[in-house]
Image 1 (cartoon, helix red, strand yellow):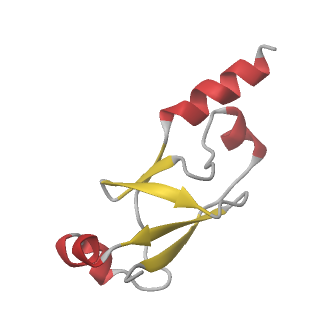
Image 2 (cartoon, rainbow, N blue to C red):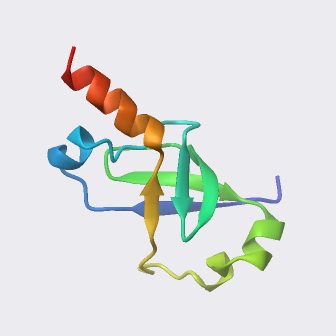
Length: 87
């Protein structure tokens, strides 16, 4: 409660998934240097909940629809995708 949900969309292809660029529910992702918990992931989108403190003390308050951001995917996704490839 008191949070905002931000939805991020990124260009997705199967090669990205092979390299581990994936999001999983309750996994981690970093957006513009802010580590966040993923909710409601799809193949090319994910949501994060932003609490008022984070909104006010990061650049999230400057985001508009279509803003370009830096996304860093959780390393665990990379490990899992590699394990699946070699199974």
